Amino acid sequence: MRGKKFILIATAVIITALAVYFAPFGKTNLTTYIMDVKYDDTNKVISGLETVDFINTDDTVLNQLYLHLYPNAFKEKDKIPFTKEEVELAYPYGFKPGYIDIKNITFEGKKMASYKIEGESQQILRIQLPEKLSKGNRIKFTIDFKVQLPPATGRFGYGEKTVQVANWYPILSVYDKKGWNNDPYYALGDPFYSDVSNYNVKLTVPRNMVVASTGMVKDEKIYNNQKTIMINAENVRDFAMVMSPDFKVAETDIDGIKVKSYYFNDEYGTKALKFAKDAVKFYNEFIGKYPYKQYSVVQSDFYLGGMEYPNLVMISKSLYTKNNIFNLEYVIAHETAHQWWYGIVGNNEVKEAWLDEGLTEYTTIMYIERYYGKAAAESLYNYIISGEFNKYIKVNKDESMIKTLGQFKGWNEYTNIVYNKGAMVFHQLRGLIGEKKFKEVMNKYYDEYKYKNATTEDFIDVVDSVTGKDTGGFFQEWLN
Ligand SMILES: [Zn+2]
Image 1 (cartoon, rainbow, N blue to C red):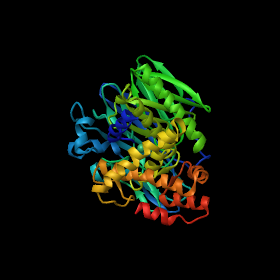
Image 2: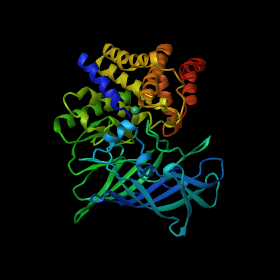
Image 3: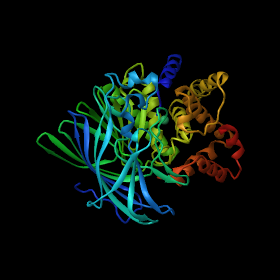
């Protein structure tokens, strides 16, 4: 994500300067989510069935499974995941609850499952397995659910023109070395952590609705006033959509990847398309080839700048103006870099936000360098990254970068520690190991952790193996 504080700063800088779809069973040990859902635009409700085909890939024998119910974070007014200052921006028409109702859960379509909804704001679904699930074994269950969207202009909800459908369905918590990760939806940062999975989605919407989503449309059928879209997405860590009956769509191609822009105004919509294409082109060269066939940049009723999801990013509609044109480019370059750092190479964004945000922010500075030259990149870096951090550190304690989202005091601290200091770590590293090795690190980190989740330790190991040196001390000094 790249938020509104940045927008103000960057502005200042600019002034100065089910048809064919099938689960690839047997071929993979990834979880497959099969959904058959319908969107009711009058009531802003999505309902239907989600079948989860899960294979235990861990040595631990599992007795139960945990899934996130993120929509429940939007249920109670005093617990919504926004800071106090943001509430008015997020709910311009006032608060109404958003939530998810679980009607029932069955195993293999017949046996009723025993489950509990628990945790902070009832954001966790715990399903008791009928029998122990050891490594290599699979379990398939179907959730009958209903999601109520709130009138919120964040990642989940609707505004004047668009409907943002993200973090909306029950998604498995990650089971890693530390066990289940059942963190709630925090107000700060991007509080998500998930495993790469496959998705087959059958979505029914009003006939006039234009849908941007993760994955690729395989088939579309129209009957009466409804449209059913079959969407297939492979090797992605989430599934998000943005819809509007008023979207215009432009598309182009780069290195065999279809890049799409969903927008309302031709002039800025086509500019957004160009920025996205330029970004994909550079990251393909610099990091590694984008492995998906499609990428969409979507103008949204989203007040927070930009937000990344697999194959799709939401961009605040306020950026599609003459005065914000550089911000539009910067935010698109940033969110596009997240396709690599978050989307393809994942990490725990709750506990190590700096890893993907710092890397994404620094990759964005390198995009500026690629298209505007070294001097422009350097002055931008000095101004919005190190300059901002140095201002921050004059009046604040320099704290550890490795902490969970709940430990940050506000957006100011989060932005400075995670984005600015985060990007500084990579800038210093580049200076320390040189241009060639830095690129090698990017390439190797990408290749080794493609479709996986990496940790700070993993990144340091990559640096050490590329440089043949022990850089632990360097990172220790910066991170702690
Ligand atoms: Zn970001």
